[in-house]
Length: 405
Image (cartoon, rainbow, N blue to C red):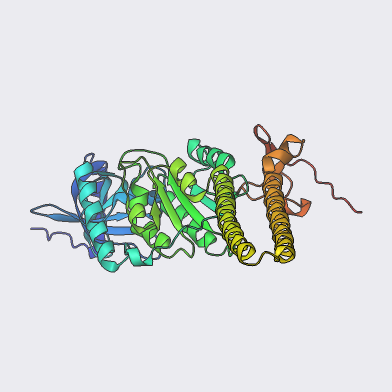
């Protein structure tokens, strides 16, 4: 009888690997299970295990797959129930069967909601939501940064609100992906950029409405930690009024919509001016009332003096002259204050960039929304935008000519 062939361990694993690759079902399979043992080392690959009540399987999602748009990799959260699509193969080094994942989706909204509640409870315990650490929004911010998509209606709505209510404020855009695999890294990088801007007053993190899957990037722990580590106050405006994300809990302030966020950070200058005028009018009325009371008492006392001392007419005349001088000085002081308030109003109006644009000028911004005032700040082939009095235009730099004077 012939002795059976003897194979090396590597040979056996190679045979198993080839068999798995040739199996039609295992080469393209979807597996549902609960995530546990999740880790993501510096390589960027994701390692985790899928389990059910009776068994488990090791899984790996390569960084290249995770970075693909709509691969769903940020649904891989400890304790969440997900569906992984990929192929089964053996890792020859240790002979372990693995599922190599190419796509991930949540196994129903209930699973995502459970993962959301687990993360919310954990971060709350860590102190990320403490009210005591939250900062006030400046009453009159000079520089406002919007972290949101450069396309769509969100950024345009915020620009319209700021232009109408607070034209003297400067709005800078840091464009990011607000959905998909790159969104979490984009948002975290944007907060790192803002931490290096010293004269920044407030940040608005914004996105339009969507499903819980669409908004999931704002339920990511890394985004929560980026908001927590921000050096500047953060207003979170994610989705619609009924949408709540982890970002909303960590931020210094939550706005129900991006447009409301712009209204929160930008005071209405018309109301500010009206309030100043009202206070001036109230002050004038109070001053006039006090003066009338004083004059009345002086008249009463003068009458008493005149009755008791009939020859006191000259002194009374001098006192009346003194009263007239005081009245004249007060009138001049009030008029001077009115002129100063008028000059302040004119200065505020002059600062309105829209008036300058209507005279034929334009605001030039680079792709990051930063105002360009020198030719050295732009380069050939760069796309720049022009803000005119009635809208925006985008062009590509074809030629740069510097003034040598």
